[in-house]
Length: 142
Image 1 (cartoon, rainbow, N blue to C red):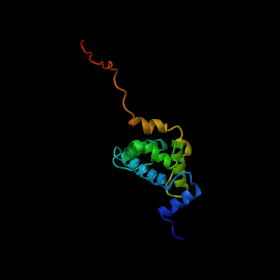
Image 2: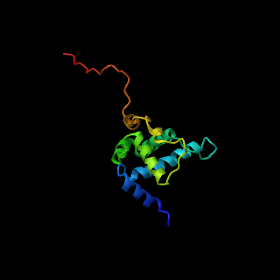
Image 3: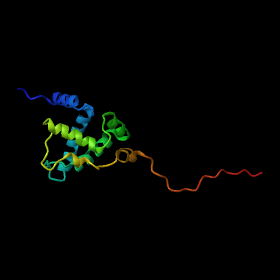
Image 4: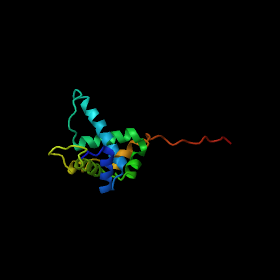
């Protein structure tokens, strides 16, 4: 029996759990690679397991860098609206043999990560200006 390729496995996952678009799984894999590269640099380029919280931070950074102010909209289009959704995606990939986990990894690792509105919208909101006196209209002398 031949091992299914990534695209076939992804199609099977989405077929079983249609809550998330296939793009969400592809994005998560890219964000994981991005996170692992960021962690490997300070660790003498040695790859190591990424915790749920480290992955969430990496996902946030990768989404902001990739999609900028559209990150929240793009993620929502894929069915991802909270950190727990990333946990579901990770464990769907684990259950299909596309990611591995340790004994201590669980879906709970993705709970209470961050608020999506704050994480993906706030960096693009205008900074509040310092309190300045209101402009006054010049008065004409009569």
